[in-house]
Length: 116
Image (cartoon, rainbow, N blue to C red; front, side):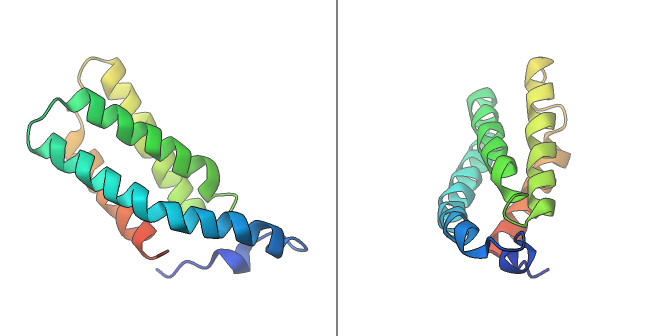
């Protein structure tokens, strides 16, 4: 799915949001790489709570901006990942749903990679 935020920007303000869009795309590379590193750490059996907490924090940041810039699917995916990770951590079972959450993370990263 090709994503095109400029066509989804609110009428009359594309230039104002274009700068925010460019920043979002630029930081997406760093966020993708960080999430991949953290995901690999969890798969390798390292202490999962700090890694999953950081993934949830990154997902929160993505969700907070993506919809505004015309990427509602990425925003929704990120929010769902954040909420599921936080719920499992809070329940004391951080890896309870890891297989399905990690698949959601991979789908999110694939969509984000289309931005860059």
